[in-house]
Length: 163
Length: 298
Image (cartoon, rainbow over all chains, first blue to last red; front, side, top):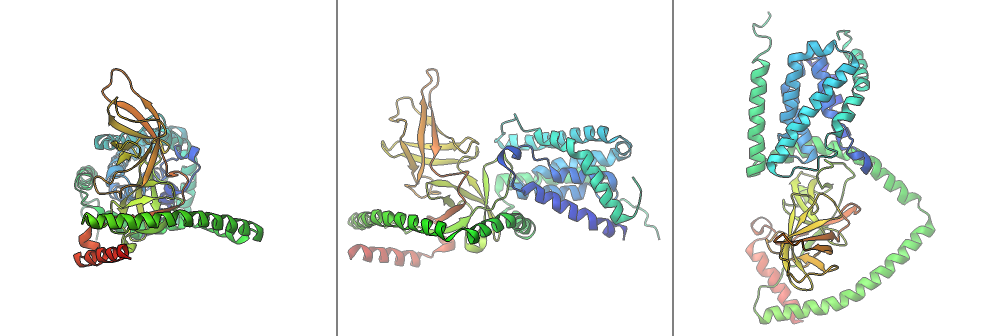
């Protein structure tokens, strides 16, 4: 029961995140687009580790792969690994201040991007790296606001004040 | 009653299994292209509705733009189009004579006549993809008999090819993507080469061209039709720079694509040399060639 109630808010937020991935941006902003799906998923893994775990992360990654025209599994493997880290450490990360959390999120995003980059490199089409990690930086910068927004949403939907 | 194990398999085990599955999936997708149907169905049932929604605002704007533009403007555009049509008609007249002559010559050589190329107009959806890849989403898919590897062109030249198919949408790789290569021929000298994408939508690179090749800045390059994927004689680009570094064994040749890769909104899908088994039976091909032969006689 608890699970279905939670998914009423998790699935819509992930859907919006997926749409933000595809939303047309002006060309100069394109390289700064944060990985919305990863950020939202990190939040839910942190807030509800019992419900949102590696399996959901894997399917979310597969969706990113399809929308981006990447090799199937490329984003999925990175997402699974960073959500796994969150699953191990969520109690510690939760008590951090927002700024510290942003730093952790930055590291996790970098790990995910490096894993994705490896796959791209193995396939033999490594991109130009000068702007490659910009999305992680932007993602870490918007994390505090995203965190507060999603926390409000979650409290309104689940009526619990845990975390 | 409380179940004994709340968690099922441990998180570490699940992670390891999922990572292994991911690796298997990546290999299957990249090496054997085995998962196109999985990708197609995710694309059709989950991603396409979202893409459609995202594209709605821009569709709405273009619709209001059309319905609110003044009578005067429309008349002006109409006049321009008429003029263009007239010019196109004139050059078509010449072309049809040439085509007939060509058919006659082919018949004399008893070569198999060329099949007419079938085309369909598709629109590029205003949707962003990975900025490190040169891809676009088209609003036509498997329901219109598109196939993987199908060439797409715009009014100026070759744009790319279809790489993933959904039911109502498809993903196309542009010729400027670093993983794309297209066999080309220089119009003036007949020199053959391959044009590789560079990741920059304004630049293509012709590789493996020896220093003494007959090549000049401004030369037009066309598809050679070798490899069978692209139809021959469509414009691809224009040579913009040739360098012949002394120590290297090949010249560095840069071309600029003719197609407006980052500006076109409407593209043409070309059915060239379709996978014969799927689309045309041998009888149909016979009929088509007979028909063309008849036309040549008239």
